[in-house]
Length: 111
Length: 122
Image (cartoon, rainbow over all chains, first blue to last red):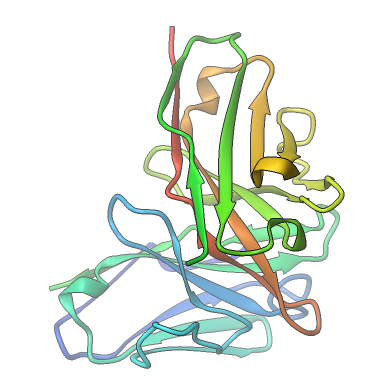
């Protein structure tokens, strides 16, 4: 059971805007920045969003991140077939275990 | 170009030892933490811990403390993940990643290595 809760799946059609949520607690998202990673099928994860809402160079502005309280969201606009991937949120957790925690991942299907 | 290149696929028997590697290039290796992440077959990402190549300081997830060892060789810009006695449950893909740091307790992994698949089976 992951400390960060994501929906297991999401879907959309090309051109649509979808949002993937990530819910945590005061010990992680509530107190620390959130990062998002994209894992295309059969490949290594790639940084998509860091520090809640920052995009690394090379990541299209179709991808955006936000955070409010103990929840974070990843929005993808103008959905494309190549966006079909697993998406993971991550944040540091200050609780007893004091470590980075990942959500279980959301599998995005582009219909 | 900043890159992390990992060693190749391993097939081992239970009880055997193993050391996999992650070689960094295109940046000052000793200035950034290296993290290790496990992905079991068909599952999500798990943070195993981090090591600072500059002084070999480590931080392990409680789930992996005592089960694995992180080390580095500064002369070859290489980080290592090792097991002394593998179990079938260690079967997974293991990723290394460089940790970048921003302001105010902000850090993230970028880039990631391509992953090393470890299969443990009798």
